[in-house]
Image (tube, rainbow, N blue to C red; front, side):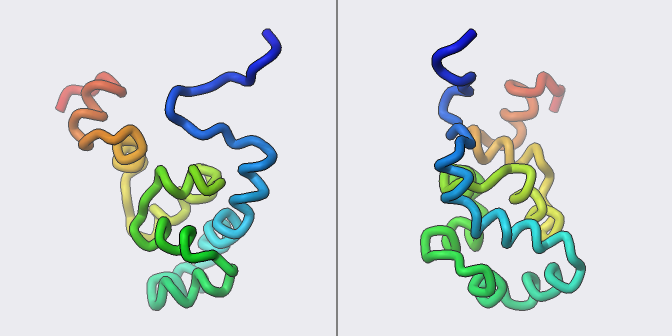
Length: 115
């Protein structure tokens, strides 16, 4: 072992640089653990995102539920999954989106489920 960190092909590594990059988006997502914040998010998503100082690129990713882009921007999947509790979205749908696959193909090909 040593040298390069473990990598998953086509998946951004959540390293120190990306963690700092994703601070705002992760802080916003963590806020969704509070019922009052979830209500504020449901009521006016752009205003809620402004409370955390998200830039235009981060806002666009959250508003379009572009999970891959949120991760690329430093979003920690553990944190940004809190958004799925508001929508709600199944984690397997997010996995399919990140893999660039439709949900049924993801379930069948990546998870070995019969669909």
